[in-house]
Length: 318
Image (cartoon, rainbow, N blue to C red):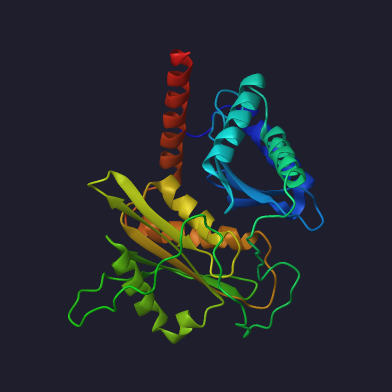
């Protein structure tokens, strides 16, 4: 059900515009239609040591009658730190019911990072860079080093090679999106185990065009029936945080047993935050096309509903 209250919709629009103006390139729209946004928060503007990514979905009822749905992402973030931050964010929401709170959340996270910086002599042992920081690239440039932004472990490519006659899952290719000479294209394959993921990736990289892409970002989710849990992972391949965003989109859509790879061929013109929008749009389009998800809107609402149920249960326990 779309936001029917014009006042609520207007509040959301005004808050998004304000945050975009305040935080500039640190704020980006992952998917404007589905109200999915992301902001990178650091303890300082110059040479930050500690950085955390806050991803939010704004349900139609926010801010009047529902909180944002959020996820905190950082390679160094421990379970206890996540819990501490989550409690702080929930307190802010409860203290400001009915009001726009994203700015308060961002600044609370920044306070947390400042405290962490002051109590630590050195930053996390995770040094990242991205092709779109301050570097101009030639269109044919492929001199980058793949690295991992996601908190999960990278896929182990030491798994045994695919045996002759072993069935390879079907691989589908989505329609490309081109913007300012950069081209994005998604590839999808059904998978039920990590070995199949490895085999599909190996098969894709046999294609010279895909192998020569500036980035091949991927994420997969496999449902383990016996454990009733998900085996999931992602890879940025040089595009900082893109793998985590892609995996988060797949979590929102609640897709099962699928691998999505998004290839990007860089065209020499920096796209800024728009590149993340194109990556996720490519992925969502092929997931919908292959009937893995009808729309992110329904899943977002279900996630919000579940979050509210958990919140109501917590209140009853008190």
